[in-house]
Image 1 (cartoon, rainbow, N blue to C red):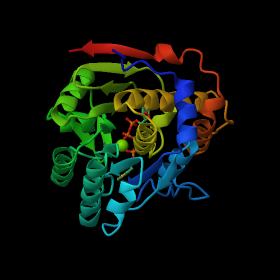
Image 2 (tube, rainbow, N blue to C red):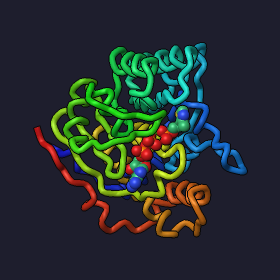
Image 3 (spheres, helix red, strand yellow):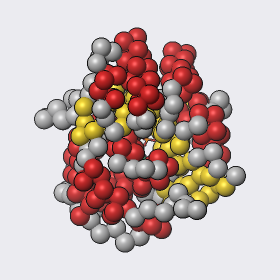
Image 4 (cartoon, protein in one colour):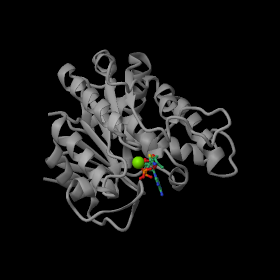
Length: 286
Ligand SMILES: Nc1ncnc2c1ncn2[C@@H]1O[C@H](COP(=O)(O)OP(=O)(O)O)[C@@H](O)[C@H]1O
Ligand SMILES: Cc1ncsc1CCOP(=O)(O)O
Ligand SMILES: [Mg+2]
């Protein structure tokens, strides 16, 4: 039986380039256009493009179901969720379920307000979610455990996050990616720590949102969602590392690091990553 760990990262990156999956994103207004950047680039859309996917940011209830039906993956990001946004996310998620399109949900800020708790609960209950990605606080909130989420940031300690992520996977039926200093990828049966990333990735807004679209892009070019989630989480962290190492240009702070990070995503398939396979550790097995 093939294991979740059976993937070759270089081959995965090349598959995405050739598959060029169309990824529909119903996402928030904060990271869609990064106002801190002179060229007002779209972080979420560009992360998709730089991995080799094709982004489309359709979020109108009149068309989103049709757009998702023709896509290879769909991301729902509830960062600035409005009533219209909630209706659009449900329409997009229902279309994904009806058309067998991998669905990734980023429950941004769940645990911070009753509204976000309700919307997140509706998405994971009413939709068939393939991958759920959130920070430690958000995943703990969905698992029904103590969570401290200030705005959209996870605060506090989560010593058992791997066990919590597995509980969240059992509750939702999704592969769960709990992001933080060490990312955890969990299914109902096992949990892995992905030892990759850099603290600079936590110093600008949008890295969780960009992780979500990374997972959607990888899932859109794969036939195994759990393996795609592991590969995407690993690739994302490695891109953060090689950007921090200066391999994609010097940087003076988080704003210029963000540009180097985007360049690292675009160029990761050309970087030698000799120890990539050793970065994933199975930490819990049911
Ligand atoms: N201190 C850190 N060290 C290494 N990687 C980090 C750190 N902080 C964030 N990251 C990475 O940045 C991405 C976003 O994580 P996180 O900040 O938890 O999400 P969010 O922005 O949704 O709160 C994840 O891939 C995570 O691994
Ligand atoms: C600050 C903020 N507020 C609503 S959505 C958002 C962006 C969250 O981005 P990330 O989850 O990647 O930090
Ligand atoms: Mg986030």
